[in-house]
Amino acid sequence: MNAQYDVNAAKRILEEKLAGVNMPDAVHVLHIRDMKVEDFIVKTIAHPPSIRMMVQEDEEEYEAVMKIYGVICGGVLPPFQRQPRSLTPSKMRNLRQHVKITTFGVEDGTAQQIAKLRELIQDHTGADVQEMEFLPYEGHPCFEAHARYFTDRNLIPYEKSTPFPSNVDPHHILSNLRPDLFVRGPDNCVEYCKETVDARGNIKYLPVNPAIFNPGDVIEVAFSCVGVPVKEGRYRLLLNLRAVTLVTDECRKKSEVESLSKNRAAQGEPGFVLKRKRLYVDEDEPARNSKAGKRTRTSVVGETQDCMEMDYN
Image (cartoon, rainbow, N blue to C red):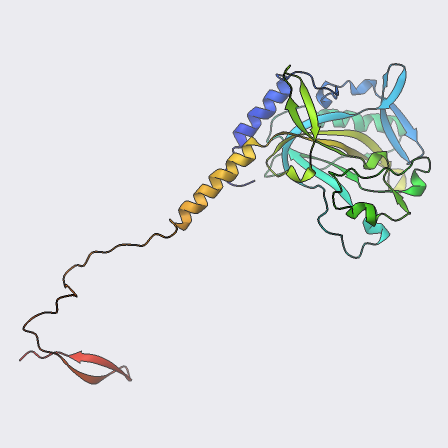
């Protein structure tokens, strides 16, 4: 974000979204603030080894997906423009799509709800769960969500690899890169959308190229909370990215226009030629009754230079 970015305008947009002034969306993903996390069903699954938060709908259990709003302040999103070099299996495993957002201090209850989820995992496992720590953006608290592009095949032996959609991998770089060692499983799938409003005032989501997302955009991030085992029997809580939706890029684009205008003003008007008036001597009419001076050589600080010897006689 540049110096012209209007933080207060972005905060007002976030406050309006949190106040629920818009109509319900088409997929009914609730903000984490509005979810009763204490009613989540905590389950340990073997493939991949992890702790999952489940909700019950129509007598069936589904993984809980929740959302938060914020302004993009970091991250790496697809598509790849060229093939990465020297990729070992370890490096391929760590390739990920990642987004970092901040609310610029607008309180939305996310931190408190995530703390409750951490307690649920601790109660379920009896093990220590690491606290989530994210570096702030200009002093403002942040949240980060990510999803890897690939999962080891042996970790999800019952899942088939799904192809990359054209908006995520338009140049087929990831598709051609994937060795048989890895698959693209459910945890690797991220949807990229833009929020629109139809004629009836209902919010709809249209798929977009992830390249449209930029720092300063107000977005909606959908994610699931996953506990993964780490060293010494401990667990770590992750926000597994499920979808990124553009709410508005108005603040970012406005700041870019203002920044461009200021840069042009600082550089000066192109093609401008400074005009000057003559002060004393009219160069087109040589002075009359003057005698030409004689040229001589004079030494100044040991150097020889041409100067004019004036005739006062």
